[in-house]
Length: 88
Image (cartoon, rainbow, N blue to C red; front, side, top):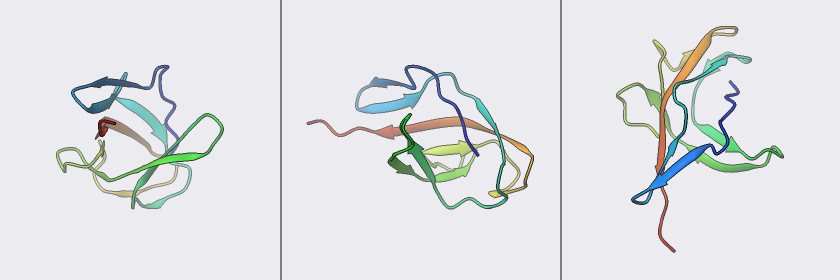
């Protein structure tokens, strides 16, 4: 599933980055079990791997779906995406 993010994609505060404009919808282009999610920059380079759960499961990304086994052609939503950013 590819989700197109807003510009800027994240808001930042108190050491946490959170997605802007949730929920985000996307169509499943390859069915199967979700193991993780990879955030890529506009050039297609992977910059961050995140955990994925169903809504309420505590993952970095929470999908509004009945299961983490995704079916080709179905639409899924990210209802939450946040992660901690360490201070430097």
